[in-house]
Image 1: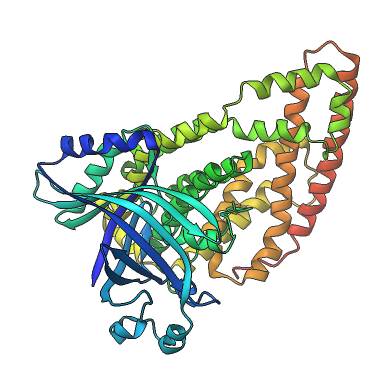
Image 2: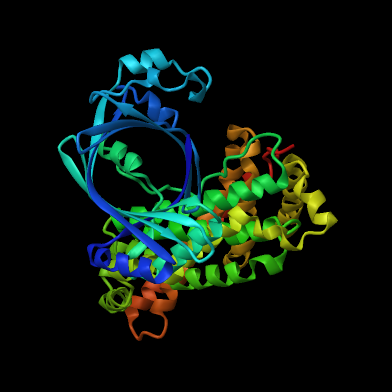
Length: 506
């Protein structure tokens, strides 16, 4: 068995000729292996039983020699892929699971039944160029460049990937090489394997953005440190997923999910401050702040798109006010283009941030300044931490939003950040509790936060109207004020309902 420890990059055609030179600059010695034409077929059952177990089964033929490969469920930490891999020679084009050691399979897997029902799902065919390099520190790293295509159900998707795998030596050298490579402007870290892409193509199941940030998957008995690790890993993959979604189909809502993932990483540094010393995250926080600043225009852009949608209640009003419509059009003109965003995701600074988060997570960088208090906190059961935190949040909400007090538009706008942070605490720790009870409790608060987003939208539109000498815009401002009043009334009703809900963590 081999366990792959590799980083995967996606690159454009323009970067391919530059790879050999970059490798030569970095390595102490380089062995350039002959290029190979690899013909691969991936197998599964009609009900995708192997896929459900996160097992990949592949046959590969090159120069009339064939092998079969099993890749078992592994771990993806940021951009780093680690999966157990087993290879056996193959005499025919059909794989045979029974040839592998019985001890590798997950408990309860019906190997015989699955083996009888295997058939090819998709194929990947590519030219592979390989370099084996040795670093100054003595580590050996295999660099693999694949150019070709995935074929499934008559559909074709291009492959243009670079993988670097640690063969022997220090993981640090793998990251140093990655840091050297990402200076190329057309390269970015890749999250998805060829197999994952092939299944999506075969099943006509394109990658889709999440509607919400979701909840960090946690298990009962989790410690505070384990929960922190799970949170950061979840967030890195969430960001990378939506980065890929944007390349597949650019949209402002997809960019908002990238923002959500970055925001949750920053939030988790504060949430787990008992074990994560501020000094250990200083550089990361600075870079996360930079990335959010690059995307700070997105929310206003979503507002502007909302105003000009024919399906929205504002459309008729705005279309009857050409001065306001012109202001909105002018603002939309100066927004970054899809090409600008793709350049951001390709830039060295962005990819270096993802690499830094990955390495910090693997190296457990938050432990560098631990004292006995932090060590004890890391081992605390998460359930104890979560209950104390949620009780404190609940009391603060009662203090900020006391029953009987009538809140204004300004009050709600002022509360936005505090309410968002409370909900993010639930995103990080809420998976410990019953889903239905959690959803029932959170729904009114989510309604209130969405109401605040809408108030922000109305306030932004009012700002655009101000300073314009136009009777039609004055009429729109009055109309917007009334809309805001109706919205506040609805939020007040949600607040009344929310305080009657039983806390799901108790």
